[in-house]
Length: 84
Image (tube, rainbow, N blue to C red; front, side, top):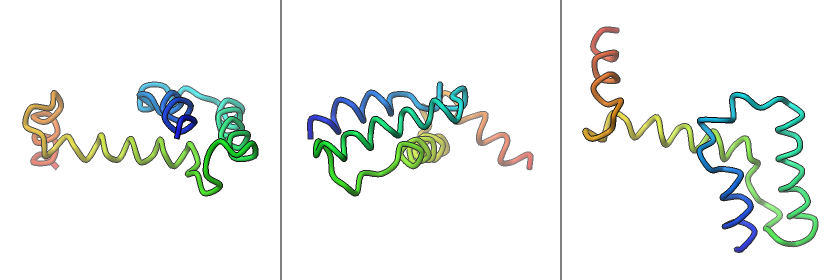
């Protein structure tokens, strides 16, 4: 639980802001941290890959925009939907 809370939490903090700027080598290094955690028994063998975690975070952020009237991008999102 500690590995997931600390390490995975740090790796998945605000991925929408930085994931697009990473190279393939950077992503491999991030994944190797998770593999080392699995190999050493610090996290479950079925741990989701970092790429999938980032994709899920992006999806949940994007899906929250149209349903949250207080979200900064809500009005822009609604206008774009009606225009197209």
